[in-house]
Length: 362
Image (cartoon, rainbow, N blue to C red):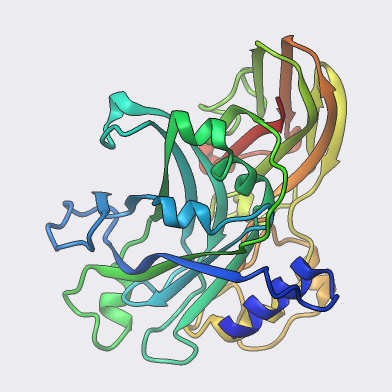
């Protein structure tokens, strides 16, 4: 399956023409079976591979080397692979890029910004059944333009953060071989690209939100409503600016936001930009990954209409990265706003982790 993913990526890269022998496919294995542990537990002191820093049981970070960066063209896929251990419920995971001052250690005072670039949901997975791993593939061509830009690379080191929060408590009782264990998943990350040469214009990156909580009872900019507003100032013009948005609804209580499809409305500079409603797709393609019995899938297949009526995401699938054209932006003051007017957050539970950033040519 992994080889087929690489082949399809290369076909896209080459435009289905005869392969130029000077263009070589590249794969960089950044994380190899790194082990995540109980998210509520005390941080373990198990050894980690060279170059990897354990922030806590749910978070690791590793600096991308010059070899990693030099293997990236203007086309880049991020492949996350999870290997089942002792968490048999659906959990939320993230991948982020940290901009760190050049040649400085990874420490709070040296981190300029950290930005989520990919999000995924684990399946209900029993480690004793097959399949016992799951792949998530993200196209992140815009991130490639950051990582191999000479101006940015002269100023920053780039570190790749790998996150998965989970707990082993149910699996300790329900999954043979998990009694007393605290390891929840193994995780691997590959960067898949090629040696293709191209002209990389200087990039402008503007962070607005990264996994910031949004709801209507605690994490809102307008009391009682599900609204976030970000005023910001551009110091320079940005050409061909694009808005990148990652959002997913969570709250598994009865009537919670995980089970209600809500329209999201985005505004830019006070003008409505777009409306979208997450979910609405069938989760049947991911049934085979959900090897632990659960109340989401049940025992029998559901129709497309049944899935579309309520689901926001599928266990075992990635959360989409939504991209919207902003055109050319002038230096000066701007505003982003998101509104989810029908969200209820029953019993004051649940939230929407919100990630938004702008990228274009400087």
